[in-house]
Image (tube, rainbow, N blue to C red; front, side):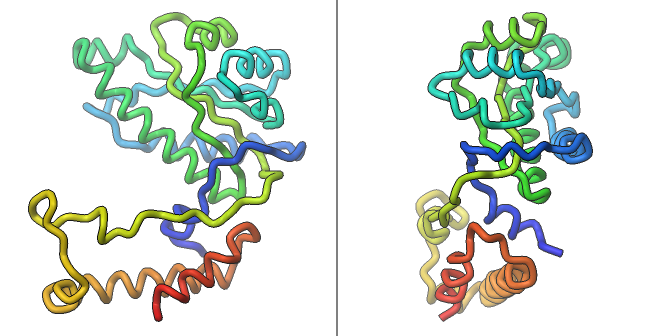
Length: 224
């Protein structure tokens, strides 16, 4: 079975989907993963609207900016923030905190979709009022994201990430550790990274995703 890092590395933003249907079970699994996200005060301020109806989907697509490709997805999921719940628990600032919580739920959803062999994409550029009208929701909720869900029909390329040693500081901002420092002072850390790379490579070899075959070569090069 693949570990978490393998799914995190496989996740991509998918903008073209096949016509293959998505099961209710897979949808439920993604929503369940989202519902286990952390939230400020554990108020779980998210709500979900699952859309299969073509007319409702078309209205959602029209409410999003430059997102006609959304119409290729068999399922759309609207992620909402319950503003009333957030304000009731935390005051006006609670909307900001709770929005962060909803974003954590979205990430859980995306990773769960990847683990099920599904694709999705975080869409956040839309007309909120039009979204609410399309789904018949009150103004006590706020749309945070539109998430398409389906089987990818696009060629997915390798994702380049910035080097960790350029983004990671130790103890204070701006203080980096050189490779020599890490080897001398953080030998166990280096061994952990090496183990993680090895485990991920082995996981990919056991169940290689077709769209990231080149990733195996990159992992091998990291260990040289």
